[in-house]
Length: 211
Image 1 (cartoon, helix red, strand yellow):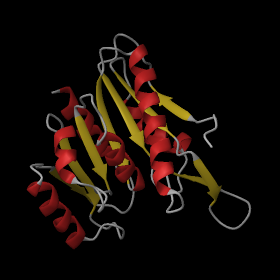
Image 2: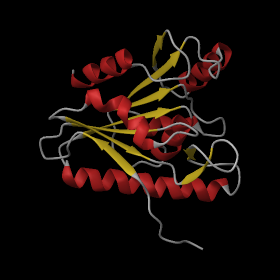
Image 3: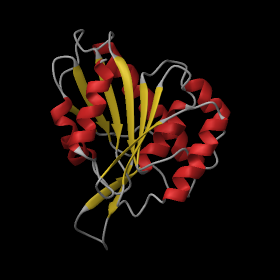
């Protein structure tokens, strides 16, 4: 049974006809978008806006009370959850571009948000300027040939911290081999840090999008 529900979306910067760059940023497992978007506030200006949708499922991070986190999906009824968040993210994009029709689209997925971004974009019939997978990779069950078509005119970037215990170097190399066979040639950006965002790298990504 499909039911309407309330989704939460957080924003940095204004959407208008002057907006040239729209970033849709997807948080990782157990995070909340209202905190996640704060990392991107320094990127917002008259021409750049950031939207941070929040995963549709929330849970207590420890026990039965206290801090709450969100997730994009679990293994339970996973195909329905994927379908739901694809519809959700399509609506986010469509609504934003009604207010900012001249904006190019940039997508950043952090950790679980990286796999979410890939599953969303593989069905896209519209262009994006770049996809940034930060501490995330293409899902193992994804057919990368179709992803290559979706990203034919987009810049692909992998970002990860050198001390990130969730990103093993051998897994990165295996992923790179897969994507190169599919005709994708990502740029790799590393930084001194753990499983986290990095202000200097975010600034670098923004500056590159302006060129």
